[in-house]
Length: 231
Image (cartoon, rainbow, N blue to C red; front, side, top):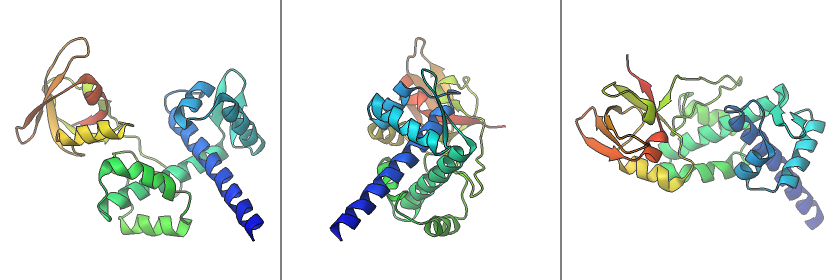
């Protein structure tokens, strides 16, 4: 029994590694046509030989296209799996926040554990419970069951012209402490704001919310907040 149990655990871990790899490639692909080994090493916290080994395995499975010195790109089959995992992750994050009361900075790690463990039936039950949402609690779009994902026209708060009304639409902070700081400053999804002033050379921004509250944030903080212009 122990041998079989160990075998099952190893197979599950290997499957999780593949799914995480594909999901990470998809996310990084949004900025680059092909994703370099160095970027995957950094994003996955693994060595370059481990990236190369996984890439070769996924090439054999028909899930990625890998070119030495040029990086990787998902095939259609690989993209389908990546979108499925993103759907799982983002629905679980929203469920944890809305139904279980998790603080937003804590949901990512919890969803990372759960997304590989629950069934498709469970995920679709979560989607139905939440009313088939289009966005997760960070403002990231949730792929549909068919793999279709919205692409709203957003910009970083650092690029919003002065005195233009916009709504907070997405938090891109990967650091939990940075995300917590953004929330403490009063930034919430769909909250309306405008930028009153912006210091040069990546200096701080002065922001006014629609209830007249005024806050000042640094360039790094503002760059992790994406907004959509109103009107």
